[in-house]
Image (tube, rainbow, N blue to C red; front, side, top):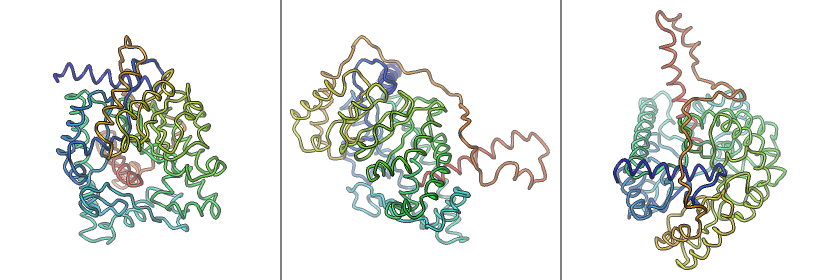
Amino acid sequence: MNPAEAKQLFEERLGRYQAAIALEPTDRIPIATGSNYFAEVYSGNNHQQTIYDPERWLQAEEAFMRDFPEVDVLRNNRIYAPLYDAVGCRTYRLPGRDLPPDTPFQFVEKENMKAEEYDEFIDNPTRFLIQRFLPRIHEEFAGPCTARSHLAWLKGGMAQMMMAQVMRQRTIHLEQHWGMPQPMAGFFLAPFDALADVLRGFQSMMLDLYRYPDKVKAACDVLVHEMAHLALAYADPLKRYPIFVPTHKPMFLSPDQFDEFYWPSFKKTIEILVAAGHTVRAYLEGDWGAHLHRLLELPKGKVLCDIDTQGDIRRAKEVLGGHLCIAGGVQDSLLILGTPEEVRAHVKELCETVGRDGGYIISGGCNFPYTVKPQNFRAMIDAVMEYGVYDPDIKPKPKPPQPSRVPVAELRPQQFITPWEVKKAEWGGVKGDEELIRRSWEQLEAMAYAWVWQWLL
C-alpha cells in the first residue's frame, strides 16, 4: 500500500469510527472492537511470543489486517512483558513465565492496602503508592535500600521507555503502512475500581462499604483527580481517539450501592476528561442492566459504551440510543462455536435492529476472544458489509485534530512528590532562566507520576 492509499484509508476508517461515537451519519456500521485478542493468535503466535517479542506481535497484526481489511480499528495486546519482569510484578501471571506459553495472561487480585491505611492513602495517595503499594506488588522492590531494589526502579523506568518506543513505532507503522487507527489511547480506572482491584481487593472492599463507608467515599473523591491526571498523561494529544476505561465491579453492586459509592466519582472523572476535549470508551463489563440509566447523565455523544456478552445490547439501545454510542452484540459463544451461517443471520439481525439510525459499532462482548473461528469472523464482516450500510455516498472524514491542552477548572493541580518550588528552595534559587529548568523538572515528575499510577490497572 502506497502512502497516499494508506492515508486515505486511515482517514476513512477514523472518520467512520469518530462519526459513530458522535452519533453522526456515516456510510456503514464500523467494525471496531476495543480489544481484538483474536488478532494476537490468528497468525499462529503463542501468547508468550506476542507479549515478549514486539516484531512477532506486529507480524501477527499484519497477517490479521491482510486477511480482514474491512476492520476499522485495531488494538490487541496491551502487555509488554519485559516491563513486568523488570520489577517482578505480582499482579499478573504471564505466559511463558508463570504459565504455559499458550495460556493467556491472568490478573491476580488480593489485598495490597490495609484497612487502617485509608487515612494515609487519602492524605497523599502518590506517596502511599511509592512507599507502601509498589513494594508489595513488585518483588524486586521488596528489599529497601539494596543495590537490587535500586536497580529495579531504574530498570522499571528504562523498560517503560522501551515499551513507549514499541507502542509509538507500532502505531506509526499501522497508520502509515496499513491505514489502521487505534480504538483508544490512554486509560484510567473508575475510582471505586482503583480501590477494589489491586488496593483493597474485592472481598475487603465489599466489607468496607459497611465498615468504613465514609473512608471509601473520601478515597474515591481523591482518586477522581489522580485518575484524570493519569488518563491525560497517556491520552492522544491530538484527541483523535477515546480514552479507555474498563469497569470491573458495577455488576456486583446493587443499584443503591452503585449510586452511593461508584457513580459519583466515576461520573466526575469522565466529565473532567470530556471538559478537557476528549471522548471516553467505557467497557461496561458484566451486566450493567440496573445501572444503564445513569449513563444518560453523561454528555451526549462523548462516551462509547461497550456492552458485554452478559449484558442486553437491545435494552442498551433502548436506554442509550440517541444519547450515547454503543458497541457489542456479537455473541462470543457464536463466534467460537457457531457456524458461518448462524453468525451471518445473527449479525444481519443486529444491523437491522440495534444498528438502525446509527450510534452503533459491531463488536463482541467488549472484545473478540482468542478462540474465534476465522471463518466465523469472516462471516461477521461479510454480513456487516451487506446489511450494515447506511449511505454509501457518505465519504467519512476524521474530525480536525485538537492539539491544544484544555484547562479544566474542576481538576485539581497534579501533586508532585517534589514540586518545583521545593526543589528551587533547596538549591537556594537558580542563576539563569528559571522557566527552562522548571519545565524539564516538572516533565520528569509528571512522567514518574504516570509510571507509578499505571500499576493500578
